[in-house]
Length: 489
Ligand SMILES: Cc1cc2nc3c(=O)[nH]c(=O)nc-3n(C[C@H](O)[C@H](O)[C@H](O)COP(=O)(O)OP(=O)(O)OC[C@H]3O[C@@H](n4cnc5c(N)ncnc54)[C@H](O)[C@@H]3O)c2cc1C
Image (cartoon, rainbow, N blue to C red; front, side, top):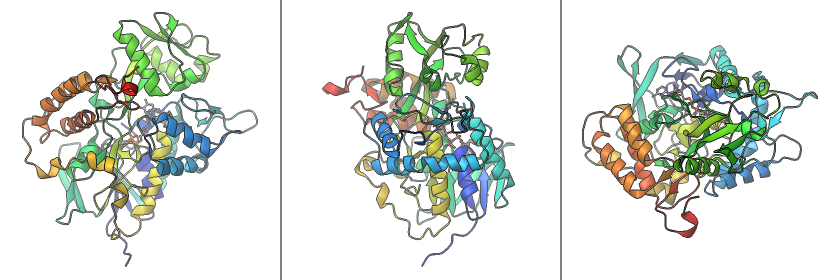
């Protein structure tokens, strides 16, 4: 018999995925977030926009095909189909929330081109698309009477009953006080893990907390080694690195190594990032040249502002670039309803592994995924949780990646590591190019600290997953892969 679950729906994280989930929920919802409502959310930083097949000559089939190809044919075709098919209605939904998308003179949406897309399909609001979308959804959340927002609280543990289902959370407020809350339903919307790498475009606070919470509760994770490096972080001593959006290359900006072009700038990100990386290892200087892009400063005011903070001008200067960790394709394994393998736990947005991205994310597909998964979890979590089935998430690939060790094995208990130490271990082993020896060293160095330190634990899971995958695919490039097609460019 279907019963409605007791207590509020608890949503952890207030980026686009968490905000959307809370807004779409049909029951009382408690939205808990580590900072203020939109602070520390990568969603606010998105420049390019959101992909949807709405232009003339475009179709869901083409969008799905581009996504599948960019992901090195490793994605889940059902997830790709479902999420790309939802994209036009997602953009319409955001228009209803008054997101100020750019329009052409005839009133239709101005759709940009980005790498890996075969059509102009990126709806955008200038080059501050993420902020425009996220603040519009956040405003609706603040007005919604079914949502209570709890800011400045960090969820530190999921509590599980004897039957392995969610029965509460532990959290810490900004004065350090620990609190517990009983609840039956939790949606993780905690974003990515780029802050574990020394060069990243992500907020420094993006340390994969959701992966740690879920894995420590026994949830399955998958594809944690599949992370995307953005080819064009601005190479200046800033942390995080300023991002030079892909849309610049879509508008004609060129990549130069010692003054010469060396790559087709509109190939998928893994290809372009590897090409840039190779030039850097040859001790060449790689620049992005946007000087000839018409009206570049007017079209990309946020980027102009960002580079200006480091003394550059888009219209006059060559911009030094290097790959920076940008996005996590893997995460907590979920089914089409965003259910994890732990009863009462959902995951949405970047922390979830939906199968959309395969081994490499197609540009501007993640804001889309955040909205679609946020909506799906809201629907799923409003009905019974008695019929929880994990059949959909028990794929052979997932089984290979299971980390039951986190529950069933006595863990070593060394001290917490500093973030700087974790970053240098991750940077030395889990970069654009990897090999088994460095990955083994990283796993061994982190292992004594995984019980005490969530960031070390997530880094260890990533390195362990990379070690377990000896063949190159998509963004995972193993220099010691001896199969013919696996030798990286
Ligand atoms: C610079 C940059 C540019 C990008 N550009 C684009 C783009 O143009 N198009 C596109 O599609 N994608 C883009 N992306 C990727 C996209 O922004 C993210 O994948 C997406 O916004 C993730 O949304 P999210 O809601 O899952 O997570 P986030 O937006 O990162 O939100 C995570 C939230 O969880 C909170 N949180 C984390 N841990 C806890 C905890 N333990 N307790 C409580 N709260 C917690 C955080 O404070 C935050 O509120 C970009 C990313 C970056 C960094």
